[in-house]
Length: 194
Length: 194
Image 1 (cartoon, rainbow over the protein chains, first blue to last red):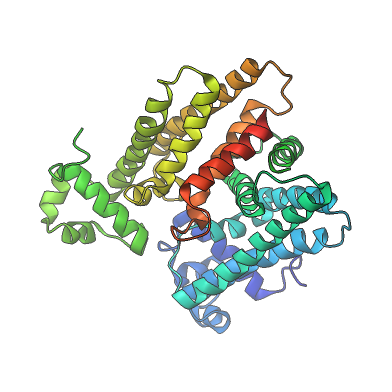
Image 2: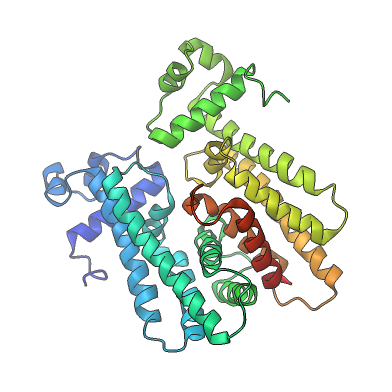
């Protein structure tokens, strides 16, 4: 994995594009803008990505890779279901608040024009993530052995909404720091769903 | 209020613009596109709105008007704090799921280029809404008379995240219909925050 080196030109192009899309909008950014930002020739850019849509699609894919690696990948190593869910909440909040990745992960939530077939591939990955959370909630409910009052599906959507929405209001110097947020959201969700 | 007539040209322009912004993106829509969609001359359009940014700003303002009228306005007439909060959850979910208004309200959540002074005015209205929810949560906590484990602020953000996120995944023919969603989210939030 070359994420932390600067030697992977595709990664650099994706990162620069994400920044430009945030600053001036997806539609307001041209392939020329991307090439200029990286001191690349237009031919150099097209060698890596054939279109802006391909960049958008790969950005979304990369955002899903980040979530799968840093959340699911770690969480899966935890045996106890409750601990696994606590870890998922902490890790997912960490991804949302990661300064380095925010410009990339936010792309998943915006309404940009992607062809139906590419849109379906991203949506399939999002659905897999929701199902993972849903199954984990069900597992914790079973482990607790009480009759659940909420469905794992509604609970999964509620949790992902709470967390994915953070980027809309979070300010690094605000009163809610990351640790407090993890503690409070874990408290709300565990009491709410179990 | 002329919302339900078709005689208010500004309302019609806002509604048509919201649809175009959804379909082809904000940057991908020109003032010409808006005029054509309504069979207006360009002069006719500029008579009502001087720029696309003004349309975007007024759309966001209108989305806040909708929330204030249909959620806060109704909720304020309820005396009991718990009932008021239950009503707020039901009403806010109703606004998010309103087919008629979705194209307008979704504009509040997308990252579109608005000048700093206009952005501040919209953000101030959003903050007022968060504070209303936060105060209501605090009032319910006081009424219950138990030592709260979560802060009204974290709880307010969690609730708004759960609800405002719905548009990202909700499908009208899916397994979670609107009534079930209201019931499940109310259950999760009341158990989670109190």
